Image 1 (cartoon, rainbow, N blue to C red):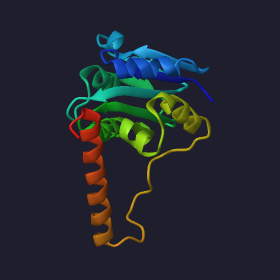
Image 2 (cartoon, rainbow, N blue to C red; image 1 turned 45 degrees about the horizontal axis):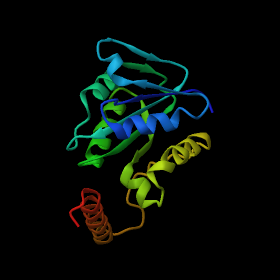
Image 3 (cartoon, rainbow, N blue to C red; image 1 turned 30 degrees about the vertical axis):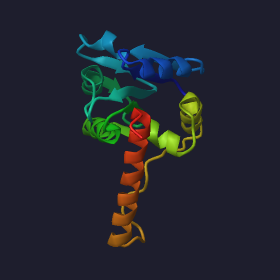
Image 4 (cartoon, rainbow, N blue to C red; image 1 turned 90 degrees about the horizontal axis):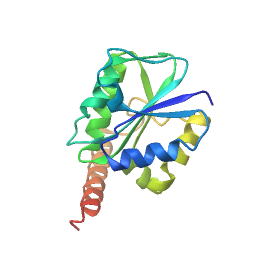
Length: 176
């Protein structure tokens, strides 16, 4: 695998822990996003880039947003986004991916803590799973379009998924 540069939100413990677990792999460099908040351009050429942050009610942290809008990277590469948790993590993931696409970058490796736990991966094994996906070029963006499902089936699946996610959030907060 080629070089991977991860920009992570160093204000959150979950992001620091994940970055620390990624640094154990070769060709991976983790950088604190807060160190780049005063730079007008951030160069990360000839490599893949990754963003690791925690959602704040569906918003991208300012330091990560600054990195997204200032980074200069390869537009041919598929980049990584990992939301470690927080409230409305899917909304934050979507916003980060949309911002990357607005800049012309493809973010095809997108993950949240919920997606990994639903796939029966412990958060301690998240780095291993993601690095394995990057090595084998196993992108996890679902294909566009509804396929052979009817509108009713799609609504039912979305509704059930939403109920499961609410239950997951209640358990993670300790409400249940």
